[in-house]
Length: 229
Image 1 (cartoon, rainbow, N blue to C red):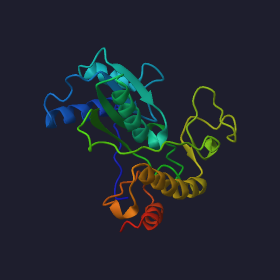
Image 2: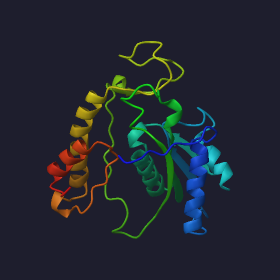
Image 3: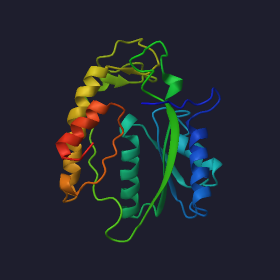
């Protein structure tokens, strides 16, 4: 980790998402034409509703397109891409704008060194649509530790997660040791399943791009797949 980017006091997930979409449009003029669904992965939405996806859509000229948020923390962008692929294959949508947008600095306890040094802010945008056979996504593996909520959480209206004391507060909380053990196991397991579903082996892989700041977790996964660090 060399640096973290932080949003301004008056800058939120939707603001960064709009800038990401505008950057995408500048790079690829006309890319938003025909977009009929917007999916935004975020753990720090502007509001419970309207969705951050809807706020972004309205500001980039996509009013009327379907819009929804995906709130699954670190795996959000992968879930969003999978949902976009499914919508295109099912015919529910023809062209999907997928975003990841996080304003995590808004929910950090800056006196908690176990979390505040790890998280930052930013956004990115991509287009998912039908591509020629042989290209595109080869496989997805989705999963969740539905009993592990007390190890990484941000409380909301109910102010309650099993295993987390009531009244803990609205800031992000994490048990780093448990998250580390989980990540080492799951990054390897899910990567292996994804390769098997796609009919690939470690020797077929040129690049592994993990959403992970911990080099020990990356080293463990590289060793398991036989991919040079």
